[in-house]
Length: 317
Ligand code: CP
Picture (cartoon, rainbow, N blue to C red):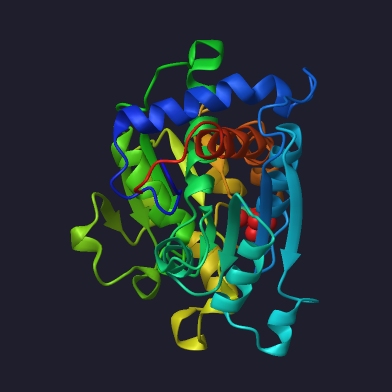
């Protein structure tokens, strides 16, 4: 693996292998074991053109727990705000000797452009590009599902037969896209639920079933219900029904929460709009994995940094 840009096309063995390395990292990620010297002498640059709490912080912790040198660069307060291009920014970072660049950008495809441009010879990790992909989020979600299902016996296992329902703003969700490709690779089946205006037009090419009724999807007793944030910043008023109608039809409210099996996982990548796509009781319930997802993000990001930066870089992606 030279870069981590997408989960599309990932094979099951590779996906399971990443989750297994994250298992190996878990004791360090949770600080039960002191940090590892593995990436001493390597430089990781966090290049964030969009806001982030979880992804940026957990990449920072992951790099530090592997002893890499780390610089976090946010577009606000940098020369990007003076109009500097992605190319000039990348070449500037290359001149400073970056071994890995973790990039979040509002443009779909930004991480691919950086990886294929030749502007910088570093491993590129996609930390979310527009509405396209967020591969480490999907990996930490799969890791969380596997951990809840199999606990200490997780190693080597996939998610064969798991039934996952993803609900909400699918159209604008890079989390949904990365999850769909990764969950397919791991053997899970995915149902998408959203208002018609928040479903992509090319769904017939996705390996999913889909529908418009959350209540009908809950009748199928899914193993996992993953709620998505309404991405108001990426949509015009025409897409959005109205907050009250959305919460009534597509929100995981207390009544729907009580219909779930006791072992159904309630997931959300965060940040959450409490009271809109998820009630406070659902977000804080024992079924909720929200904080486990955040904690597991450090293990997953340690795993991908380790896999990309330890040893010799491969010539091709
Ligand atoms: N889930 C996620 O990507 O959260 P942040 O935007 O806080 O990084």
